[in-house]
Amino acid sequence: MTDRDLTIALCELLAEELGWSWSLTEPYPAGAVGLFYGSIGDTPDRAVGVRVYGGSDPRVRAPTRSVQLLLRGRPGEPDGADALADAAFGVLHKTLRCRGILAGQRSYFGPLGADTNGREERADNYEIHLDNMEAYHV
Image 1 (cartoon, rainbow, N blue to C red):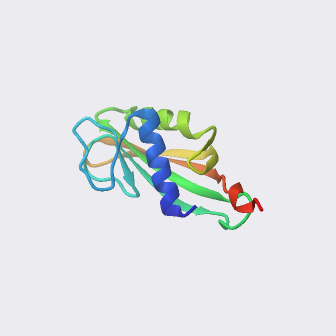
Image 2 (cartoon, rainbow, N blue to C red; image 1 turned 45 degrees about the vertical axis):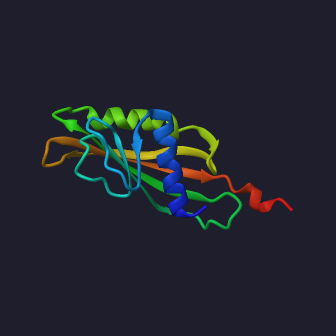
C-alpha cells in the first residue's frame, strides 16, 4: 500500500465511521467536519488533516506507517479539538482489519493551542500496521 493509498483509506474510514465530510476536490458544507489529505484548509472551522510521515519498509512482512492527525475545533470551543480526537481515537485505536489496515495504535498526542481565529488545535500520532499478507501467499 502506498502512502497515498493509506491516507485516502484513513480519510474514507473516518468519514464512513464518524459521518465527517471527505473529498479531494469538493468544498465542505458549513458546519461539517472536513477531512483533508495533508494540511487543513481555512474552512470549515472543524477540520482534520491526515498525513503519513514515516514507518518501516513497505516490503517487509508487517509494515507500519506513522500517521499524524491535525485536529481543529470551532472558534471559542476550548474542547473542540479534543472532542474530534476522542472520536478519531474510537475508530483508529483498535484492530481494524479493513481497507488494507491491520491495526492502529495512538502513540502520542499534544495540544497546539489556538490558531489566529480562536480554534483550538492538537496533533495525534498513530502507528498503523498494514495488512499486506496477500503479498506473501504463494
